[in-house]
Image (cartoon, rainbow, N blue to C red; front, side, top):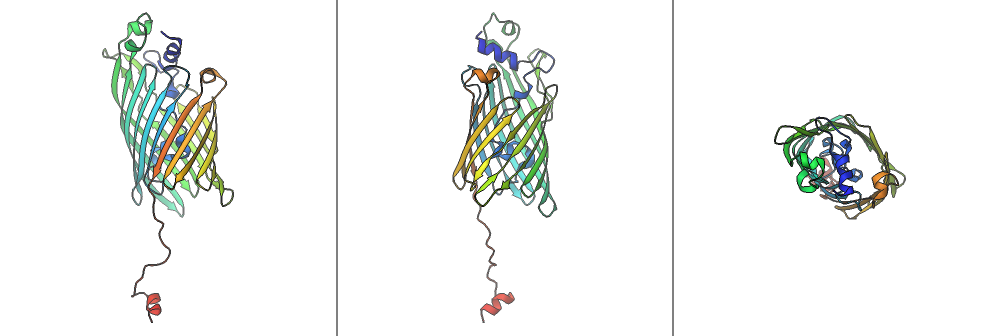
Length: 316
């Protein structure tokens, strides 16, 4: 078996019957949350001004064969005054592991006071997990020799609570509420999908009429694993062009993007580190495309109505 695949097996294949060291990678990683808040929590569904769609592709550790690769498409929008809907399709491949998932989200938004909102969101879906053990490793390897391929379908669910006040937003999220066991055909547990929790807070601060900063702090917590944190500080020019440095617990990243048209967004992020596998690879590349439905602003001029006193005076 190639050394690179051996490293991936060691990282992503937990020991039987318990959760192992590869927990943080069980959910697809992404840097697109600076432009797509819905990727942070189902509670963000419908909080934007219009319906929006995002797609992303992420390739980690470029120079290492079998490194994690993920694709994601999501959409969300408001369906009435205080409710939003969303949906996500994602695929993640990491060595011998492959996850396919589909989920639908619902959010309910409550206005507490002027410009104060509290939102509750829930997401339900299905996750198909595959472990191609025999087909991807040498037969002399003990892992491949003693285990057959695994294909399991399990329920997945998430929940979030979001508070918004003007340009401030903060959320507590459980992106994975169900701790499911992935079992082989003999009923043996191969590995466990661990429950995860998260927290994020952000505030968009206008520097002047042209420039603004939109920092976001994100914290992820996984059962039986260490806490993971990151800070993104997008610097935005006229809501058209942005550059966003990321500082993370294990590495750093830099994203650049823009909106060449009023409803189209492009974002590219490069993640790098001088330590561990990231330091030995070509870094991580991620590109995201977004589309927002353009909404016409309501005119402040009242519609003509001959029955109103103002128009009666005008018509005299």
